[in-house]
Length: 503
Ligand code: NAD
Image (cartoon, rainbow, N blue to C red):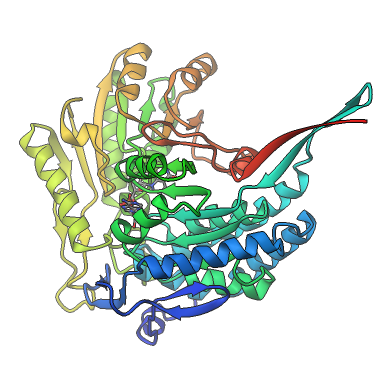
């Protein structure tokens, strides 16, 4: 049960954005340009800071390198590193309300979701990577006097650059595996969501991560992010963000030290609904709507293209409309809110431009399509809210069919045969996720093979439950590359040497 007055608590907060370098808070450089952050929920100024420059970055990298070379973390027994990461997870749990409020204020996401999903995922990333790292036993064999074994070493300094939609959870998905495998890290959060990162680094020191191992710098992508991608002293850039930025980071790596890259980029994922699950169509519709509009539509794996078999389309779209009508965007700090605010005015305008293009290019607007103004007596009357929007009869060449919108917009297509569905689903430069609703097991297996996606969820009946295993994914096509999650994800933060030791 929620007993907290989140609006009052938010009103009492004073936000100061500081870098975290060598185990200490450092004021952001005073001479660079000023970044102003406006609140998604009410449009007011939330905080300001000056974007970091080369001096800041050099200090953070120097700190990470020194810590790595001294070996205080790198050479710690993996079991001890795991204990420290588990302690950090405990501290995040203790401070979960502070972090959840940061995430709700920064992104505009509902506070209840921030508490359950964002904090839950962060704690999971820290604990799970700690546990897997301990279990990652190097294969070894001795034949005729030659002992051969695989040596898995940390890579060095990891530069983590992350996007704005899940600031803390995305940071944790880099910090967990990077630290578990013994690397040092310089983390740059999005300049649009700067509240949580340095606090996580501060708690990491409290948990026992040696000072200097985990550093945070704040600044814009074009200045600080680009400098990280070009730095000769960063050994791996682990990036989560758009495909366009991912390509720039690839070029920067090629121009500098050929640093390793992990790129988790954008998506335009299909949700394919076949006519063989009629008994569960209501549950499937709820699932489609949940997937498309979660986090105000700002979710890389959103199923933003609904592909529905023609024979059930009319009935299914009625269900979709019913479920969309239940979504009421509201103040993210109200505990019952399901959909909150859009990141900022510029992003809201970008989403509205896509919506206008859908109308101009001839798609049928089924519902939504406009900015939502909260009542004039609401403290959030100047916030950035959008109606959840659904377009039917979208053509494959329209902008809303091709480009990632990263807002609450669902595009509907239809098909007759399985082959048509696969062709439609794969007609995208992206390959991040796909969703399939079918009760036909043979079809499930064919689609798992045929769909271009790193994450494929197949729903036989009703709604999704807990997942059975911790797995990783490798984004396909222009959604990026490199394993994230699971044991494969840990190996991404590891340099492997093969050792043949002859007696
Ligand atoms: P973005 O690419 O604009 O920014 C991401 C990060 O990169 C930010 O920290 C930004 O400051 C930095 N950056 C920007 N330009 C840079 C440059 N030239 N060099 C180095 N760094 C630079 O993305 P965004 O708008 O923050 O996030 C939304 C995107 O992230 C969407 O495309 C979404 O699909 C994707 N995303 C992907 C995943 C995934 O797991 N695949 C998860 C979340 C978000």
